[in-house]
Image 1 (cartoon, helix red, strand yellow):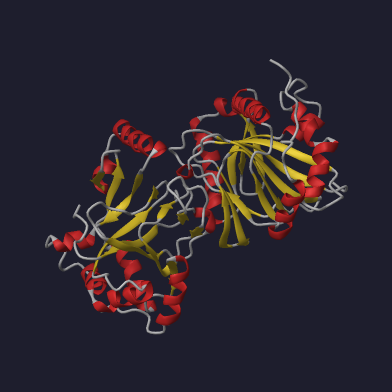
Image 2: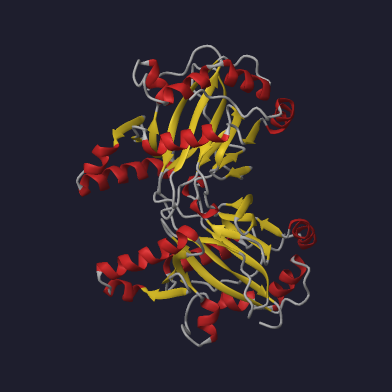
Length: 244
Length: 245
């Protein structure tokens, strides 16, 4: 296979996009990458990513390998499910497959993993320059990326992405789900306040589309329907300031 | 109980608001006691039936029968519903088509009959004509619905061949709904759902009205939802009523 050249779509009008972002503090950008780059990323997520299962235990996130889940007794597996669902009923919780590639690579894990070149691209001058211009923040210093796979029943409840120890300036989602149908759920929902208030925007999974929104903003990923015909694949994360 | 609308509603203001988007959400639609009565009826006195699409039409199954299905048959049913819903119009939820039942002479002593009488009366239809500005509306057919975890109604426009449907409505009777529980009524500009124009959470004592046709769906209720999504929904038509199920 030829080596993929990671870059943004050369036809993006960054000034116009920045104006739109400034007006709303969020934006959805179609055709963010050249098509062959998006196809390659989709293929990596679909076939070459070492997923772990991520869920909330009522206090903090748990990361469990598929091997460990396979080794669990049915009772332990049910207990894990019950715990995140019970938390979800009245507060924050989540359940999905993830690969926190930025932190894995930083720790020197997965030396040959296929997302390494994309991670480098996200932290290269061309992308950081784009990120700084788009959100009008010259202090963006790095991009913390992770990959996620939401299958039927997976979700991420309402939260605002604020973290005291991390200098998150904006959150992003590269959507890499072709031919998604709205009935399948999995939309990124934007809310007016921490109780939900009003649904101010809803972005369905799509292919080769980038969402960016300023942090903090209340948002959630709607549960994916039991009948969804494909996983919701994406690469998401944050544009960081210098103190992260 | 004799039903009436909240007497404090400002009809002129509601009519003006409706004209802007051809749909409207109205809060505090019924007097508090009436809303509580309906919520209790749905919670305790409604003979719910599970309804779902198998691709060729609407199916019904009494809930005791659904619950007594052997695991394998239950899985097969679920798979069939999922397959229908994956690439086309599908739905599954619990319903009580009280208007149809009453028209057939059933449930005449059930307390919901009083609400059906109210929906057929000029108290309600006159109000609807005033808000929608549609003077041709002269009939109404409604059903109660209960969406539990995993229930949904895929995108559709409410158009029925051979019927002059003018508008659709949904009374919400779900107190203390949480945004994460899903089940919103979503409005779309087209049949692909290319964008979400608006998404309304289940609420309590709230009425939504929209001019038909309009593309909309009820999103999947989350597996962890802590309460049922109760509503009474129906159609407003001119002349011939839609076919009875």
